[in-house]
Length: 258
Image (cartoon, rainbow, N blue to C red):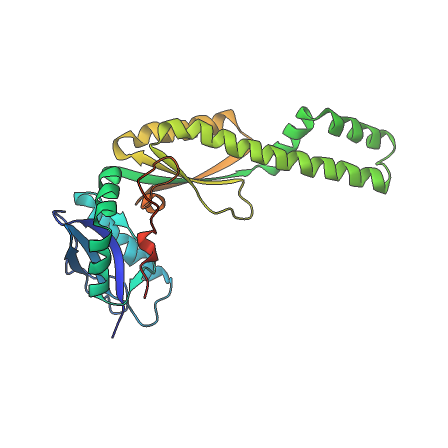
């Protein structure tokens, strides 16, 4: 028997859930609705060989996009599974209060993910201008025809330390610049090459204001390159973050598993 694949959770009164649409899988599995506790889970059967293939990732996103046209939906991350529909209904009943709270909090909201990295040449010029010791050692090495191995090593260590300090500072500055234009903020996992990976919850009607703040950050910090992805379903805010406390600690809907 196939597991149940979960796309998202909405209120039972949601007007435009894609019941009967084609979801993930080849051929596409038919989307159906599981209702319990005033909530509806948008689900389908799960393929036995479920993998993050491009076709299935797009199908997952398309179902959520269609569902989101008529109201708030709590988006599940790709690969969210339950043993069967009864298990989904049980979770809906057990966590009805939490899901209703999140649906109210996320109604009309979208997510923008912002990743930042340094322009290598620009940041080197910046740390050189800011750090007198680096300038002194660089000039001494230049006068000495390049400097000894130890002097070159020392200069390299100074530059690395200064760039790392600048990365930490720029990550904080970026969040401070963009946070006022958002309703909530969620730090994403750190990954190589990025000094910041932050998601912002933004009112759909105020998206232009947020994007203007991003452009201001770009212009004021030319040594930082920004990559913006959105608007997205608010994946990072299905659970409340530190800035949005609720009464009890909960596990995410994406943790529904066999």
